[in-house]
Length: 251
Image (cartoon, rainbow, N blue to C red):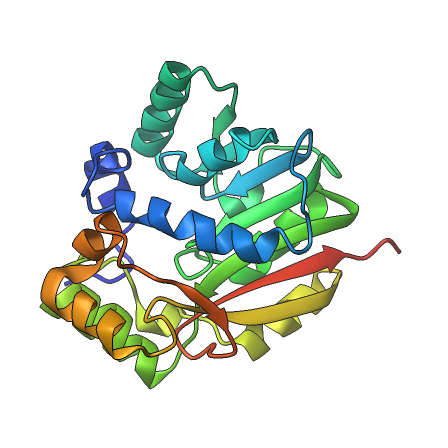
């Protein structure tokens, strides 16, 4: 079975906004993500923000509804088409473009913030994507991200359990070898001109709570999310998923 199978996003682009769909579950993570991001950018109104790897527009619409001036870019033509159609139906003005994170189709210093969630573990060249995010950010701009750590725990939870056993996320969508440790990402960020990094755990097991674990085992990620039982905790456990922010140097 191929790993990091990104053709999935074109083949199943209709799942982004389908309740219970294999991709729609990512929408349930946004409230927890922005509980963290809002510490560093409390008011998104009027902020020029780019969502790198926007998929079908789940995070773009979340930001647009909070008053941000949003652009989204993704290499999946099917996902971009779905994102544009859904935003139009919702009456939201979002600038969607087809493109890869390694070559963002925007000029230098275009944005005040860049969001990149559920993406860095999939790209071909992490360092180039981070350099591009830095390039399109204004000096002092904020880079927000989350990704998956390369540990035995992430292999067990993200691949063995959620992909292979429970089939709650698309089988083959992740490649454990492409997961990124915080130390590796920190070095890449520094080399791209970022500073003031903060990393926290993005824990979908609610801090290892047995009831949260039981919910995942018995009903799976999607049904747990739909029933309000997916309790994400921001904590110090970065062993599986971690979330962070960095600031583009003004120098």
